[in-house]
Structure formats: structure tokens, C-alpha cells
Image 1 (cartoon, rainbow, N blue to C red):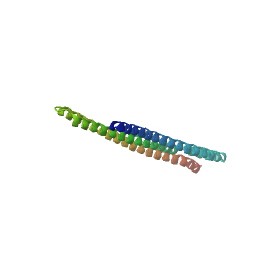
Image 2: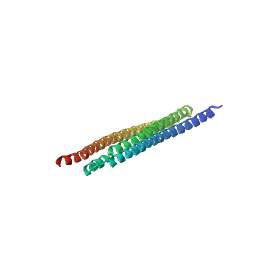
Image 3: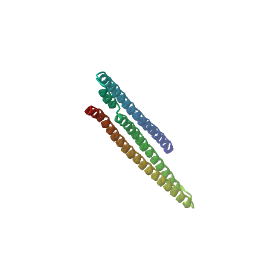
Image 4: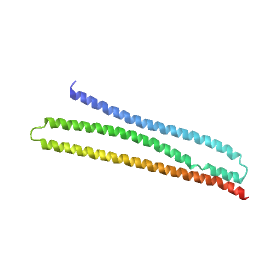
Amino acid sequence: MSANTQSLLASQKAVIDNILAVQGTFFSGFEKLVDLNLKATKAAFEDAAQKSQEAVELKDAQELLAFTSALVRPEQAVAYGKDVYEILSNVHGELSKLAEAQLSQGQDRVSEVVEQFARNAPTGSEGAVALLKSSLATATNAYESAAKAARQAASAAESNFAAATNATLKAAADVSKAAKAAPRAARASN
């Protein structure tokens, strides 16, 4: 087999491997989302059954007020959203790694072609070769700067999401405490 045929076969194998890796990443993320949704649905059904039993046993308006205020639990929705975000973030991270690896391989191939061109360039084309190498270096630096900025933006977004989630959970806990304290305060004043 010639070197060109082997190179073509190796490139095709690399493309297929990359496609399979992307498909695997998507499928894994989908599988995690399905599992999360099944668990959330099961927990919701169990909670509904328990709350139905508790509703049957209510005796007066104060118990009804306490019961209804305990039904609202935003921390569950926030936790679910956080889990979904984490799964999607992991999928995005894996896809980014695959894309960066693919781009790095492409840059290596282009560098090899430029080097081979430089070795076989006719006399007097040194300026064109230097310009080609300089352009390649500039493009590589621009890509690396853009990739670094994208990683920093993703990290900042993740930090902001975590801070917002924590603030929401704290606010939900405060509301829940206040809702539970209101019926007790009403009973104490009677």
C-alpha cells in the first residue's frame, strides 16, 4: 500500500472514531437525562401518594394552612434544574474536548504540509514560505486565544449559575421556614 492510501485510510478511521465519540457523548448525556427524569417522576408520584394520605388526615383550617404551605418546595425544582445543568455542562465539556483534539490534529496536519512544502519549495520562494509559516502561527495563536476565552466564559457562567442556585435555595429555605412559622404564630395568638 502506498503512503497516500495509508494516510487516507488513517484519516477516514480518525473521522469515524471522532463521530463515534460524539455519538457516545450525546447518548451518555441522553441516558443520564432519562435516568434523572425517571427518578424525578418516581419521587413525584411517591410524594403525591404521601401527601394524599396526609390530606385525608387533616382536622382543621390551621392544619390545612400548614399542609398547603409545606406543599410548595422550590428547592426540589432548583435541585432538578441544577442536575439537568450539570448533565448538559458535562456533555458540552466532552464535546469541547473532542473538538479541541480534532482541531489540534488538523493544525498538526497543516503544519506538516507547510513544512513539507517548505522543504520542497523552489529556490527564491523563501519569502512566501516565511509568510505562510507566519500566517499559520498567527492563526494558531488566534485559535488558542479564542479557545481560552471560551473556557473562561464557560467557567464564569458556571460560577454564576452556582451562585444563583445557592441564592435561590437559601431564599426557598427562608420562605419555607416563614411559611411553617406562620401557622404556629397564629395558634400561639389564639
